[in-house]
Length: 399
Image (cartoon, rainbow, N blue to C red; front, side):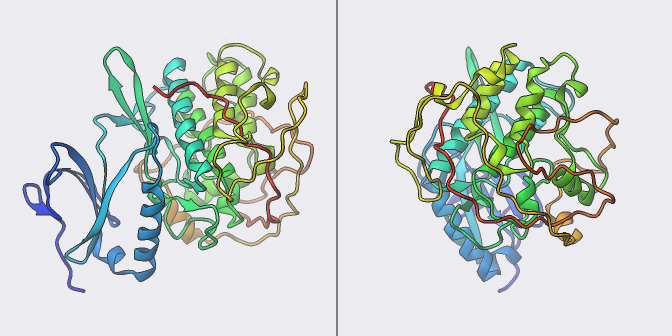
């Protein structure tokens, strides 16, 4: 295939008038473009020649855009159209006139109310995707769009589902060859090439919560390999160490969300958001249990999320059984880590000050063992068992 130049501002591409270029990299270029027939602006992404010519990538692009286009939720950025023009794949998405959560917390923590609103609304969108059998796999603050609205709460939309995966997709289990745009919020099982389900997004949302409340990622390290090693072995950090003004209860919430063992995390992103709301309100997080919340077991589900039968109410927070086997020491390829390193934070990442971490309170083995070197480890996990019912803890109407 002949090499074609990226579209230029003022030109037409697939009928769209290119009005402004947002950014471009080796993957492709992103523009604001005017729809050829409707009075609106769309975001147009034109993929590179190399990606467009790759048969495997092209098939995955078609499969994933179809899955994402089926999602219809006020907290998920809509996919409008896709196609091929001059041999290059393209996709159009909903235009959001705002910024992203990563930009908002780049220099300082967000006010508690705003951080909670972002996490709560993002959780609703993610839980909707999970009910449809879609795992994001690349969630980070930069993938959460924020549009300010006069007199009303910010509009929050989760984007970049293009790197998502169906829960039944066995290809590239770690998602590394599809190059997630950052390691700062990547779950241990994803980095370890183990089976990944919706609980990887719960881990990522816990990382996002930490970053919004502290202004820094949970594991700032100077190299991608060191970041991978921290996700695999270092206990979740205390947000109150980085931001002493936070209520102490939030540390336990983040520790559970970022548990190394997926079985020990919250049941849904909504449950995590509700627990964070309680913790930051100064209440006892342990008082919030799933049976206090609406049950979605009668909702339409996807075979990727198995819902359990109704259970009798329990007074204490349930513990999920630990089924992870012992770790097998196999080096993770440093090249994969380099490909997946966060492009949203250019330059080197400063080393954090030494601070105590919160070890998740689990009834079994944890992945948070202290490493003896910076070499990451590959953890072999057995197949996940049927998960308990996913319950939406933030069942208020979306704003």
